[in-house]
Length: 254
Image (spheres, rainbow, N blue to C red):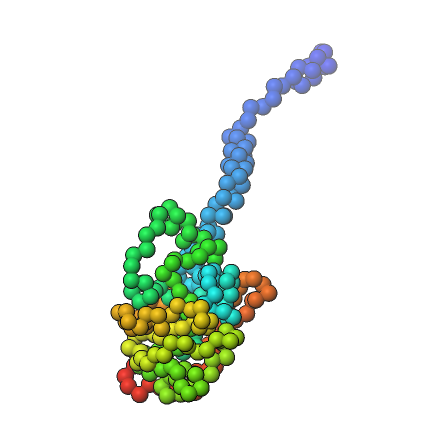
């Protein structure tokens, strides 16, 4: 018997065909490669969706576009606005820095804007990269519903419910107001002013309009709690202690 020949025949076996198991592993590998290829795009889209939901319901960054709140807020500052600050029955307090929609109080005309441009701007605003709507304002609450707010006393100060307010947050060199006023804030509304009184268009400029310059509480977007950018200006924005001694309004208030 030719043993060598027999062994040689046995060694000449063809390569086995790929079985179901090998093919399934190959398919899984290709699927994994495909997932990894598109995963960065998916993650980016999920991150954007998360930020959009966060800015819509919880906290939204806002870009400061003007000098009306200097030196508290400067042009280019990015602030974080707490949208949950006035939920569950809470309302703005005197001294709070708020962001609000001025439609119907500070703005009495429709704002025209290209839909595509508006969508891109809103997306940028949600990330704090672009300005917000032209109807959005940032001001400080001076009087709440029922408050009697006047200006000015013999020392040039604003009075709230008969108590003078020492406003340490005012821009250096600014008077509390160059415009005299005397108003009782209606229930459910706010009297608001900028910290840079000489550069601020605020409740004083709308005294003769519907609402008398006051802003509805339900138009408040949120409370400015934090300056987040630039890093050199990172700080919290607490309610001012200037109003600690103000008595409650004499009449009904909201």
